[in-house]
Length: 307
Image (cartoon, rainbow, N blue to C red; front, side, top):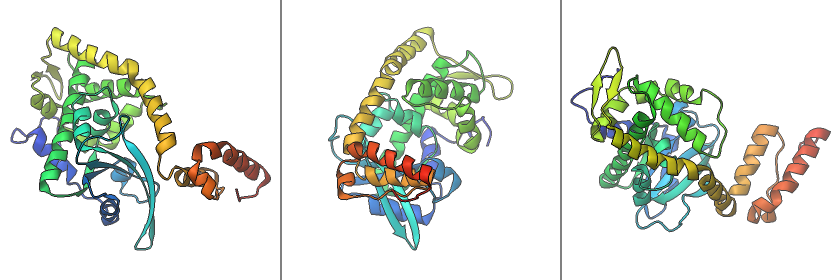
């Protein structure tokens, strides 16, 4: 696939087709099992989507009908299930579809939705075709929002990769996490088919013109006033990005359903020390954490593998 898009394609058709990408039947079965009564669909994303592996933790977004219940979203939960003899683990973020759509369109202070879902994802389960179409429309909004900021941040003329790199560098810097230098290059390299041709389609859908240069170079036709408006929009989100992410982490620490089991799995995976989940640890994962980590450190030091 080249950076010159098929002129019969639109962003909507491109996104709809991308969401139908094949995923392991076990992933679809797990998604259906996770879907609550008010679910409209589940998006599957992350490294397991790219590799097809069932190892580790599968990442889902559960999109529901109705209004958003929590002011600080999404609600995160951890799940374990054995499917046809294969143990599966999943981390699920739940939020209302309308809130997801609004965040994807850049109408919220949040940066995580459009920055995450301009990257590959698959619709692992949908209630019906109408729900699937609504979710596809929201994901297309994420691509438009990301493309608009990418060309505002990027050079006057460049390749699509130049603009995507500028976008991911900026969004990683605004979040409360540390990424290795060059993380944006690894995203593009690992998802080449997904990003090839995506930027021009997203610019067209967003009403941003561009001229083509040599090779895959483009020159976006963004007026200075429009660029200043987009950069002002971004400045506010960049300034609030880290505090907002800290607030989410604090909220998640108190409301993460299955947090103790998730932490126990992560600890055993990285240290080889199994952690016993007692009823008290299940109810109070944050309070239990210092004691658990102390015991794990002592067990590793002594060679005893039971914590």
